[in-house]
Length: 229
Image (cartoon, rainbow, N blue to C red; front, top):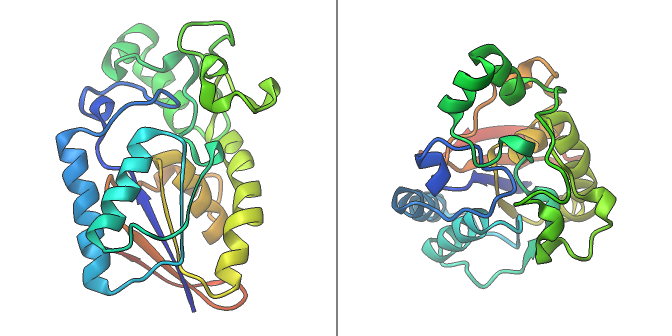
């Protein structure tokens, strides 16, 4: 039976300041570092050993993975980084304070942008300041692949090919996998893994630094789900 552990990165500096983050490369806060280390301690206490690790190309997720693996004495395992595990791109909302955005556009509209499954946020132009199109880590991507904004539906559509091509085959081979990523990329994965409806996925929360453990059978059907805290 293969195990999959999902960890949403520890609290980031922009989580702390209540800003929309998305693809902006923000570091962990001091609390976030401690959350990531604690996740590793919880994993070690459970005796979970990994064969492969996956993360996004954003610092807060990469550091969370490394702290968790270091605390569980597994920093040496093979690791793959992919933009497909990045957080949902919040478009022109990125960098804005969430409370001030609600004052500007109204609570209801901001809630729809944040929580709706298929409504896009205001888009960010490719030539705008802070656009991912100017970031070297995406230089090898077709410019058409770099979003100006995403909802959860679009996030799922870019996450699932990576799951099918890179992650699922390892689980089917009986290998244990850890993924340190982001609230929405992990919600998208959870939706797919558990076959959660479009409506119910809106109620799924991923707590920062809290490992979620899935046990699969040889057909990649979930046999058990447990949160470590």
